[in-house]
Length: 176
Ligand code: CA
Image (cartoon, rainbow, N blue to C red; front, side):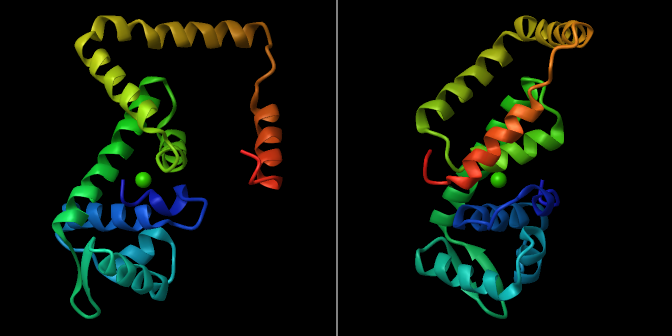
């Protein structure tokens, strides 16, 4: 999960991305250095230093220039929440049959704008799938069959329309 961020983030990382990265690095490696954070988020070290100072000021991390970054209890709690939210959304997309790479990319976009209600529905749905494995097992073969039929009928893929819609959104970023 740490490694993928460089390719998957197609925007400037936000404070949430930084805190999540600090959390994940500390959980996986035991520490988070400015260089590690910069490399995984594909930003320059001074940007990391600036953001760490901000996160320090807001009480999420304890940052000392030459000693690295530690999480405060608040940073630990919110970092854990951000990471779990990421996992939940990505798991949901994987259950829908989205491939790993796309699921990762879309999770990076969805997680920052998702409404509390949607998030809660996704969590409940995941619990439901865990408790009803027989029900969800029917989905992959259904999906496969549906795709076969669509291919056979030469149904137009929606890719080009979707690309067009994305371009429209980009040119009017405030219209959402
Ligand atoms: Ca994320």
